[in-house]
Image (cartoon, rainbow, N blue to C red; front, side, top):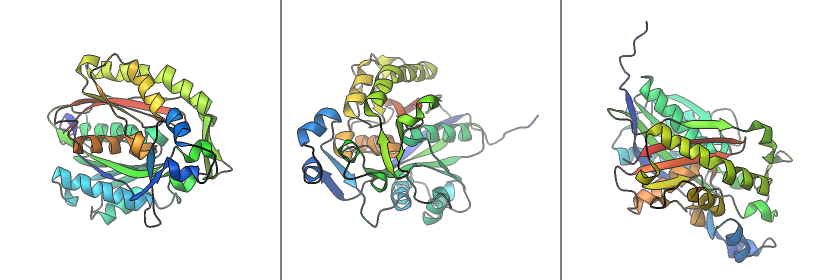
Length: 318
């Protein structure tokens, strides 16, 4: 039998960090380019404004900024991190991977480093992997980052997509702990419907909006309920529900089916837009910063996106 003397038995999130580009693009700004309006955008996706990366912002640089803030918030040095996972689906170059470069820029020496592409579910997938790595004894402290520059993949003359997507990064540190602060991940895929979200002409994000809306609002609440059941958490115990910020109508439709009316529902999409794998950690970090999620809060996360893939887990706020 093999032994795992490093295995602590538990894994918890110990800190969050975030980065948003400085450029704000409002609905009024988009009205000047495409046939749309503030009323049309807000009624369909709930967005008032979004952050768009400048020329100096890359998937890597935004990941570094968010990861650095998470390290500082957790009181950790680069030497404490032994694994870096970057969830992203918008890197321009597949080689070299983003995680190793991010680690080097943060001064993290010789960590395990890999990218993970589960589209908008990427952060939840990466969090599940990181927690299992820690519980299994392979790592002690894992830096998990969701970073996306979706503006590089948007057709800015397509009113159906240019109003939705945005840029940013969010990060979390997963560390060994005596208690379980990250519940079991419930994940899966619906690959037979993968074409519902894809790259048009190999360069522009495209989605069959109504089909995706039906799938998310009729199927995914079941995944969220299973994640609570596997974590041993009742809906009445939830402090907040933080799903992927895809569309405010989707967020609110799923929230209504959870049976947790007391839970605060993340609506970060209103001012941040859809930032894919960055949306959940970005929303969590901003909610913590506003004092909405005190230490020990019980939060349900739910990621979903292209693939079609999905993942959910219950977490404790550090």
